[in-house]
Image 1 (tube, rainbow, N blue to C red):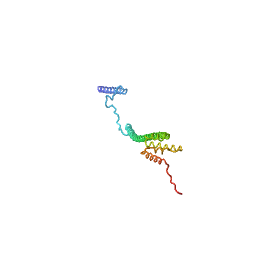
Image 2: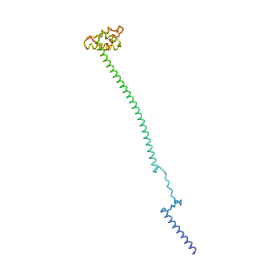
Image 3: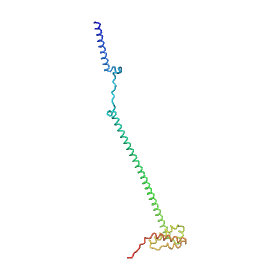
Image 4: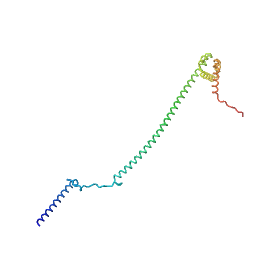
Length: 211
């Protein structure tokens, strides 16, 4: 009986010691002195496995990101189409600008040509008047010697100016007399050219009808 009581005492004492050690170890683990899960595998806490459905924050973020990327791609397509349209309009504007510039250059060249022709005409008319005055003040024989080397066109222009000067002055023109002193082969040519020139300067004929 005494021996049995001794075994019970030893057993309870052992339980008390083990319980005390357990409490001590638990306190050390709670205080962070030791980490029991690193030494006892079944104490480790595995992270909970969550099904990544559409309701999870990560999936919602990815869905929003995909929608944003789609919007960005649509905007990029619109920008490319707009850029292509603007490039086409730019090409048309450049083409029209080139046409306008070419037309402006043509008009400027034409204006310059007309001004040069007008200047030449004014210079020639002044020279013709000067030569008409000069010939009119010369003796007929001297005048014929001066015009001997002239072209038929220059001679006709000067003779016509001499006739107009005579009309303005109200006197008889000496041109017909000068023509008679020209060489025979030139006399007919000058007469014909003057008739043609005078015919072109005449006003249009009016047709009178009987009442």
